[in-house]
Image 1 (cartoon, rainbow, N blue to C red):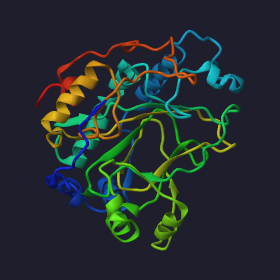
Image 2 (cartoon, rainbow, N blue to C red):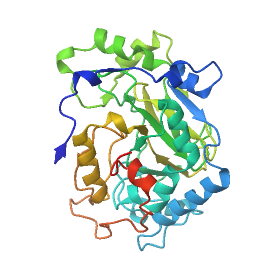
Image 3 (cartoon, helix red, strand yellow):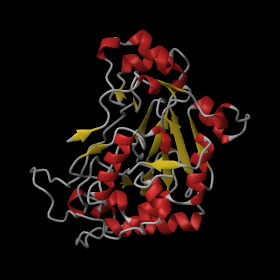
Length: 336
């Protein structure tokens, strides 16, 4: 295993929002991202186009030689009818990050434009992130509860990464979706400086919160909020905001179908990171939520519970995308 995230260069320790966000007027979704730490970009993808991507995603899930999975029959929504998942509801193996429908969604003009408006440039690179298909009220898995975290190391200060969810299904109050703690990103530095031991800080861009730590934020009037969105909407959030994936309640009958995709300026990636990312791309591998850092070369195999590789695993996607000039630049394989 090789990684490009061992030491954070001093020049990357502090980074602020681009002028596009800093100067966004109240009422602009970019101002909501700046002030609240998250925003919903309405109709980033036309509804019918998003539903077509949803259909391709669900066809992919049924492409593993098992005809027992029936989207209309909850009795079939069990692990034995599904490929291996990286969590209860996300798929990252089988080359899924580079399936044509995944890249088609990532390359939707409205999605790219939203991130271009965030960063003030259209010269972007994108994460090779996972597919999430969550079946409500599955009978074969326990509820996992809350898992509040941030995806940015305390060694970094300011806004470094903005994550995204491309909604291919609706996300109502009872459906599976994103939970955020609005405004918590504004206390990121204060929390780590006053409530943690600096000697324990590591470059890894992930930190989990316990209840006592969440109570600290509660004293700051920070409360959890369920992000609701429609088919074709794009949800964006600052990696410093406390968040987690909420499970559907018993009242939900929506099969959540979303694609995680984060974009950042290609210039933020070091030459070594771009070389590593190019190698991951050639292997049809995946990355973290970070587009320009935290890129690791690893074997993205689908591993069964007994530790063996799933015989249904694939060395390349089922349907390869067109390797266009735009795609290769977004992938970080070709320079701008």
